[in-house]
Structures are given as C-alpha cells and as structure tokens.
Length: 93
Image 1 (cartoon, rainbow, N blue to C red):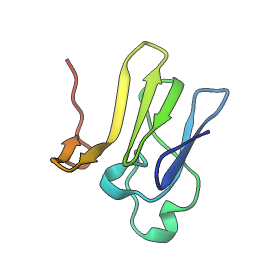
Image 2 (cartoon, rainbow, N blue to C red):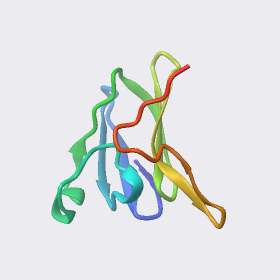
Image 3 (tube, rainbow, N blue to C red):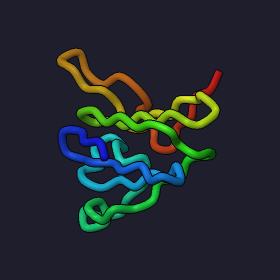
Image 4 (cartoon, helix red, strand yellow):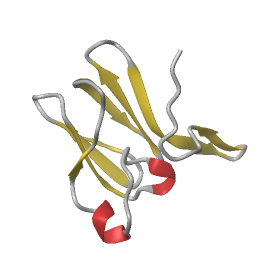
C-alpha cells in the first residue's frame, strides 16, 4: 500500500492495482463519476502486471513487469500543473 496526499493505492501479489480516495487530476488512475465511487477501492486497468507503485500529492506511478512506467494524474507546484492534463491521455516513446 502506498499513499499520496489524499489517495491510496494497493498492489496485489498478482500485480493488480486498486485505488481509492480523492481523484483530483486523475490521481486514481481511473475515471470516477461521483465522489462516493472515488472512496471505494476499485481495480485500475493497466496493460500489464505491475511490480511497484508510488503515490504523490496528485499522481500515481506504476512500474510494469516489462520496465515500462505508467503515470496517472499530475504534479502541482507554485508554477502550475506538470504532467498528463487530459483524461485518458497516454504518452509513449
């Protein structure tokens, strides 16, 4: 289990991720329709098994078994937001 400022994530032994808490800027890694839904631990969808998790203020980072990194949410500072700003946005190289 890892925690951000207002959300938490859990990694199962099977490499699945569950998230719950405040979904500001998409920190949970899933779309939520209302605030009640945010606070129910719910499975997140990643294209592979996850081997490590990290949660920050308004973001979650997941490391896949392949070594690929997945980011949800964004980082906020006095300069503004940095990160993925559009819902369901994916970036790959």
